[in-house]
Image 1 (tube, helix red, strand yellow):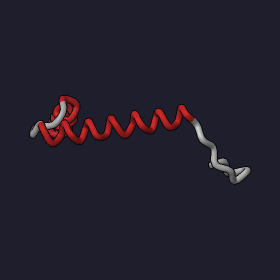
Image 2 (tube, one colour):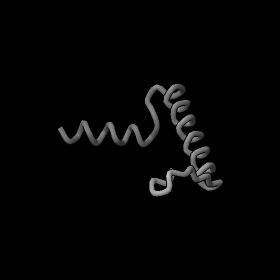
Image 3 (cartoon, rainbow, N blue to C red):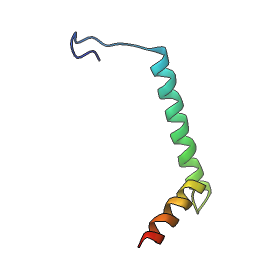
Image 4 (tube, one colour):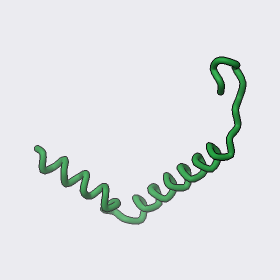
Length: 53
């Protein structure tokens, strides 16, 4: 949405980025369901938060 003109703007690039973002989020959700421990990044984040305490 163009705030100055009040018009909608459509972009193929934005559509592709949104599609990729949604696919990545679905992948992450699937990985979390399948792996009880989470992803490698989740494990590192969890480790860093527990070591800081």
